[in-house]
Every structure is written in structure tokens, then in C-alpha cells.
Image 1 (cartoon, rainbow, N blue to C red):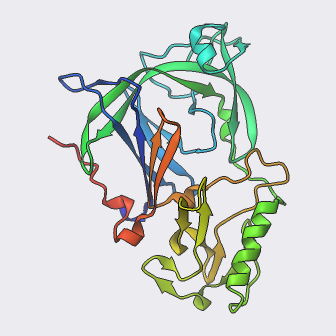
Image 2 (image 1 turned 180 degrees about the vertical axis):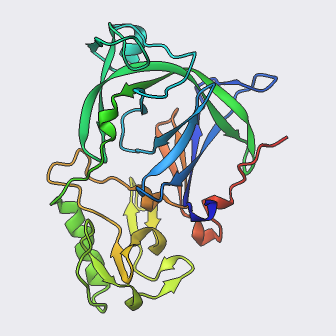
Image 3 (image 1 turned 90 degrees about the horizontal axis):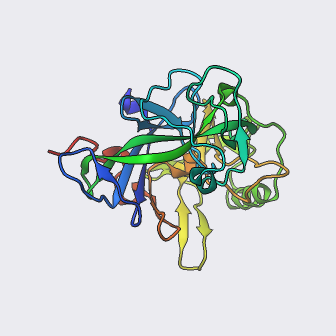
Length: 307
């Protein structure tokens, strides 16, 4: 099954957060690494985050404000704690609502706890969840090889009801940025006739009309120019084109709707085989663009435990 998975490699740089190791001696790692795979049934990207006693598969949502999990069923942890309303933890999470639950106390269901509005950006649904605190374990890395596990005590996240995991996507969306990108792309590929779009994509071609290369379909690159002209995130064909059905290749961008919360969201497909580094201390993001241009990919990262 591993050969069917696409991987993202995400590095988190913590320069101000002190982590205690699960190994024999304490240490302060600079980087944590999460292995992310694409679920073939839903095309969503999933990462396994480990609590002290089990692993929890979580969908990667780079648009979300904080990590949230469904705690209604099978949440197992002896370290779970629901901070009291108006506590310091509530202030850190910007929670100003008290949460109540009429049922038996369990993870996600406590009285006088902190309430948080949690949103599923796949379905555009939201619900009131409970601020939770637990201890998580992450893989560290010391360059190209993994290091020992490190634990993050008193990690804050949200427990959301299972109703947020219902399937569905918005229909008939419209957005000005999407139209601009689609118009640019079709102009650059004006020599190739378009075919009937396959929902939810709006720009599609016959697959046999587009040649292939080591960097994916041979189509024009899209450059995202960031805060200066010298900082450019280049998106290559492998991250631009998708095949929603046999014989049809489409531009892998979709319309964000009439009232999007963000002007643009870089989707998980555009992030495949890109190395990202989140520097939380300095509030900045480092990126590699596609590793395919360097003749490697994220699946080549060594996730085996180092001695």
C-alpha cells in the first residue's frame, strides 16, 4: 500500500518551545517531523499524531486555526484534561465561552470548560467544541535522519463532535482569483483544445494532448510571488494537473466560493513533494518548491528510528 501513497514532509522549527524527550536524557530538539499520507478513498491528507497510549489519525488542514479531533468515540488517554472556563489556557486559546455538557463526563464533554468554535473546512460546517489539554509525542529529526521521540506536555487542542466529520463539498462556487488563474492558464495553453470539465474542476483537457516530463505534465508553471519579487513559490506540472477520470487531465485548482475567508488557500495537492518549514518563533514559512526538480521526493525521507 505504501507505493500508492503520496507524501508531504512538514518540519516544525521550535526555537522558543522547550520539549522534553521520551528518551533516557532530556534534550531540546529544533525540529519535529510528521509523515503525512493521502487517503485514497477521500483524497484528504492524514497525519498520525501520537498520544502516550495510541496514535490518532488527523486530517491536515493548513487553513485551520488550531488542531481539533473527534473525541466522541475511542479517544484513549490518561493525561486528558479539560481546562476550566476563564482559565489561563482559555485565554491562550482565545476562548471566551463556557462549555457545558449534560451527558456523563468524558473527553469532549465537561461542564464549566472552555468552549471553542471548530470548523471543518472540507464541509464548511462549524460546531462548538471543548478546549482540551493532553500530552503528545512527535518524531524529531536531526537533518536527513530521524531522532528520538519528544513529548509536548500540556498541548492545547479542541475536542469536536462527530457531526463535523460528515462528508460534502460546496457546489456552484465562484471566485475572482480562480478566474484570473484559469484565464492565464488557458491563454498559455491556447494551442490545446479544452474538453468538458469534470466537477469540481473548471479547466480540463484530453490527457493524450498533454505530454509528460520528469516534473509531471508539461504545462506552464505558476509562480506565486510573495513579499518580494525575489521570493517565488514555483508550482510545477506535477502539482498543477490532476486526472479526475481516465483520459481527462484538469487544472488542479477549484473556486473558493463567493465569500472565502482567505483570498487563496494552497491546497494539499499543491504541497505534495514540497518541503515546508514552519518557524513558529519568527512567524515565517520556509519552502522548497517541488523536490522533483532536485531528483528526489518526500517518500525518500528516512523515517526509520535512528539508534
